[in-house]
Length: 433
Image (cartoon, rainbow, N blue to C red; front, side, top):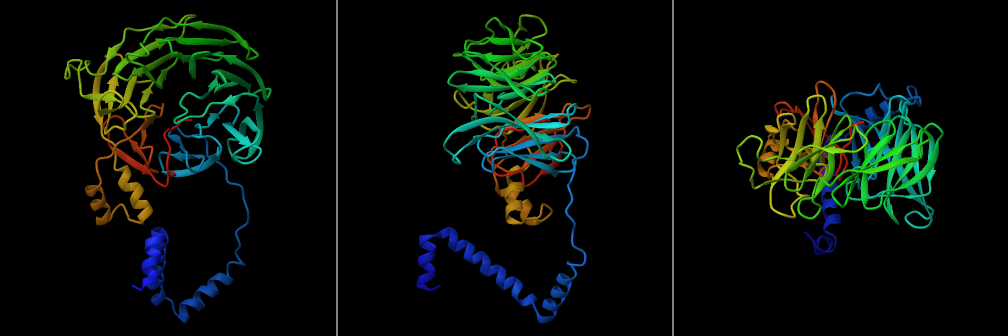
């Protein structure tokens, strides 16, 4: 190699690697090209004008039980996958949020809703917050609702927006103070901003009520009028200690009941069917089966680490070995619990997400020896986030926030059903429509 080539390698190694790749491609393809090949290609190209594809508008099939939203922070969009086939059905863009919030789907109105923001000068200037409304069949833009508050944005954005019944959507704001913006889907207007000082997140309860988690260890319930305005706000009694053992915002829902898990592995269940929230006696993830005697080196952790299948009352929690401060660490196992029995009934290991992600980018077939070697070389997979479908034959989705591959697993036996490939580059959450 000449001195000029060595200089490029030292100054810009990425450019040097790209040059080598193009040289390799040229050498590999060059011998296969001949005058006959060129003639054949030209004849084929001329036929394209005779059978030109006519523009059409694709439509989505009816919503499936195993659809899943896969937000990507770097690309600024959410991909909609069919978990049964592994195909991408569509994309919804949210480029200006730190983390795109999983879009909200309404089968009743046949619409998809996305919380978005924009700036008059690209990434600066006057800010506008709005809800974009898309057609459910074509993903075509239909309308938008502009609201005057500033939608919260964060690492996971869990609980930052939610459907309150079939008519309203709530959007969590955290500047200059925490509040909820109420948007009316029927009239297409912003209704009002409801202050929730010291609280965060939206946990829908029924047609006119939602809960929010508060920093003093309580939960608040906000009830709306028929027109979406604040009717009342009621606080629960303290059910967790914010300093000693706080709970994750990631939670699971069974009707009017929400299940929260603490950093230390304590499960809290809150029932919101009455006027005042009622908490059940808490229990430990480590004492239910008698194996750990209530103490363990394992801890819950991750980003979207809690999922609940409502019909079977099964709780799924990402677990890892760690100590205090490791609550955002990815875990090598998902533990399954029977909520009625308060007992662990299974442990699931993630599929080979890292090998799948790297294999796709390197062009390595999953059936090849190279892929098997890749799985053997790479460390054991861990995941940050999980979500479970709510049908009678559910599937469990899981992802590592730093990889563009989503595992689809049978929650009963942990069998890997498939890997959703080319799922972006980086994202902390998943969303079941």
